[in-house]
Image (cartoon, rainbow, N blue to C red):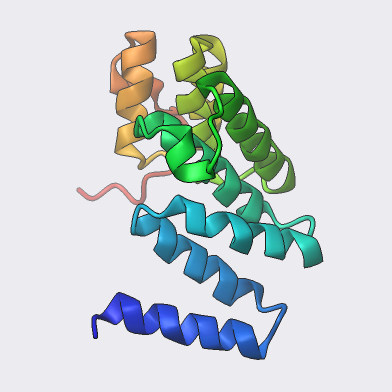
Length: 171
């Protein structure tokens, strides 16, 4: 038995023993997403929101799962069991990611995903704002710097905040 399968089994047992174990549910949902199985995450995230309606990570997970079909060009019917047009998927994904950011404004994953979805919608100004907010939290996100450079045409070194402490200068 592979490690992920045994971890999945252990998490399912943990959830069965504790109906409100948020951490076990979040871990299980993340495993499903890493397995490219986002449809398995929806029931888990909605269970979390039933007993923890302010859980930013659950909102983020739902937003990412909705956005998955757009970014990976997977037909909505394959993930959601219904034929939903791309615009509706985009709107749902954006709504859940925005709620995640309202609850936890420092979640770079939500900020970056939202920026990329804004890019898909052609909202470059909003995408730039989201990427910049994300970089204020963590400037070491090279993929975000590259995306922002492509959007703005500005060299990466000019995108970084000038007053960021980068450690002691060694002579």
